[in-house]
Image (tube, rainbow, N blue to C red):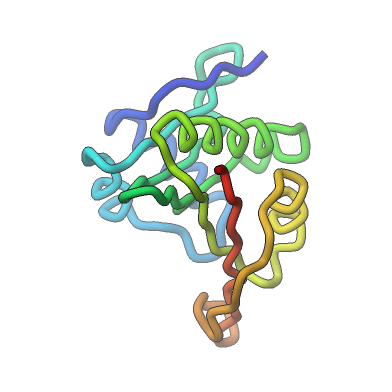
Length: 148
């Protein structure tokens, strides 16, 4: 059974490897490095052999929590680990006193949208031409989950 624990900067290489294998336009190492200050709450998911197979990056400012990034190694996708990470993010946001959770997702990412909706997120808006693609840009769907 995979185990969740808080992420540390030492986990960045493994998180970056998952990010690069799972995304067409991955975050840079520099971006990961900026996500380990006081306002962030991050976690990694460990396989039975202590290999990192998933992660999330969350931020809490005032009473809002934002999911900035979530990823599962392609080898382990479709096994419920994304939902386990998302539910942990929501629980951590509640523990930190957040009243709402926010995220944005590529309009073309139907699997992620389905997961977010399954966990109670609702679409609240759209950011036109937000994400880069191989042929141009695509919209971001904004989603929220009220916690209060």
